[in-house]
Image (cartoon, rainbow, N blue to C red; front, side, top):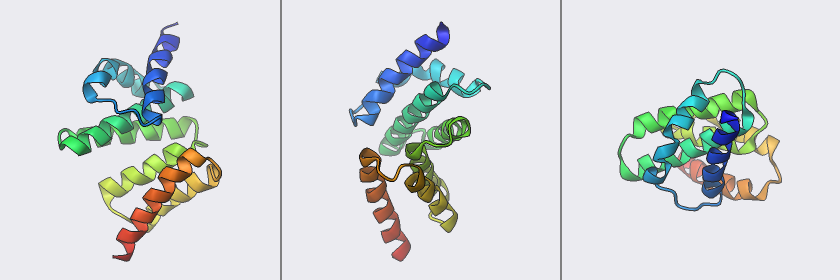
Length: 146
């Protein structure tokens, strides 16, 4: 029963984030223990793991915008995304998130484009991802060309 309650709470926040509703760190603070439990859990729980990764993405984006806790938030996001993809590797959105994260943390490199290719390969026709992916890919190509 506790896993179901955790999943329900995390799914609600994840759904808001994926609909691009602004969610602040203050609004996500009470989910901190759930996020920590999700990453610490050794068993795969794909729905919970994915929700945790999406929430960690918003926390990382908020950290980048504010300039506070950026390294910690990026590390938490990396851990959450890798766990989720390790359990459910066919998620094109999280491959895109990993591409974005690696480029932010390590800089643009050819190896990172393999992550973008995975996102395209696994979700070539998912319109909501295509919008984000295309904008990100164009920005990255512009940086690479400069």
